[in-house]
Length: 228
Image (tube, rainbow, N blue to C red):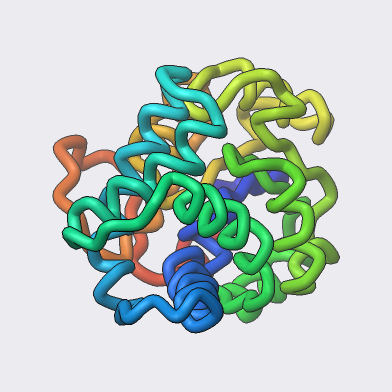
């Protein structure tokens, strides 16, 4: 790792606690709409559905609107809780609006970034919606750590496509040998980076099984201190 000068982080699920902040957003929505739904029980259903739709989005098999609406619709259907299409659209819009009302971070985020910021040049590569990601970074005070922010809309491609990594490295004026990617998605972040030709670290707090034993894994962000 001696040659590394540039560290590229994913945002959601890696630094920004998407699940916790999402649960709080849905809790607020359900209270406002007088829905008798436990937000955590809803999240248990919603999370895997959301992940599945994001994978389709990353493969360009669905657009933003389909992702935004159908993940909510499918979650309510799985709960056997009937709501109208108008209500689904209302919840989908409110969710995006309320999502950044809370900005809880993954444990160890600030300590890790404080450790890394004086040793490396830090960047973000995200597939998230650009207008939402910018607000997340600002409200959570993470923006001060990162020199460049590359989002899939600006790059015209989503991770794991090589073009978004190329776009990010060009913006950062970084070479492949100087760069490393850190993220929670084995497909989008890790394999995307490795196939592009840069090193990668899999942030794997759930300790998922990985077929390639050579992939560097961490279960907590603080472990980066032992690697970088």
